[in-house]
Image (cartoon, rainbow, N blue to C red; front, side, top):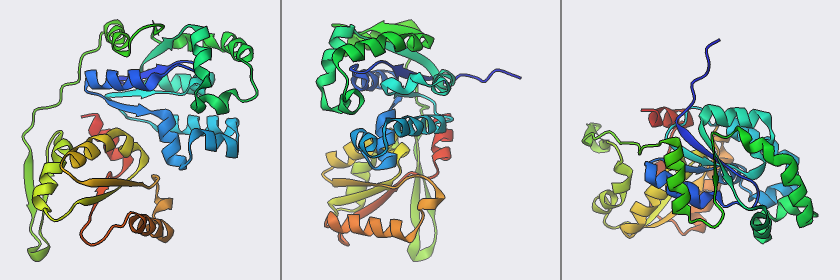
Length: 298
């Protein structure tokens, strides 16, 4: 059987108390990659924060959900993915990360790491444990991080310095977007005609485009699904808000089972709660998740 080809993504791993999101965001910006936080994706898909999820369903159920969502991320390219500290504890997750791309273990002095756990976001994972308990668990588990392609010590270093070391060790180069001119196609349906604009990176110019087309609109609601929101939502929001629009997102989980009347009712309630009227603009951001993954491979 032929070996499965590894992706070109970068996966960040590390124990509790290590802030991976800041490093991941800067790394993605330098590489022209998209940044994806696995915990944020879990929260969006479950409509619960991590502490709420663990309180309601337990830590075991959280790690089952984590494994399922990680396994669903097939076909992604040019993405920096940060993972939760416990994701590496399951062999299936470690294998999945290896197929996704290069894995980077962010290492921190254990005493500083434990001191960082006073942050509320770590509370569900350390409840009922002393700092000595946490250090003992780290000593038992830290060898599970050794499957990483590289290890980078972040103790006392700026995120920028850490990012530069990751790029140097992995010999990474920024992703170059294809330089393609945008093109507009008009669908001629008489009074119902509309334009389709095709191009690379055109979402960043969405604000000025809509400002010109809809001068009397200042409120925009965006309907999307979790993966697309995390990958592209910030670009769209930044462009629209810079053009003076007020922007709100409504996220619908992926899958046919959510295409129901009660989902439509939830959308209507959301629009009413945000005082949306006939002067507002409704945007659908997304499509089939597998299509977005295919597009990211181009």
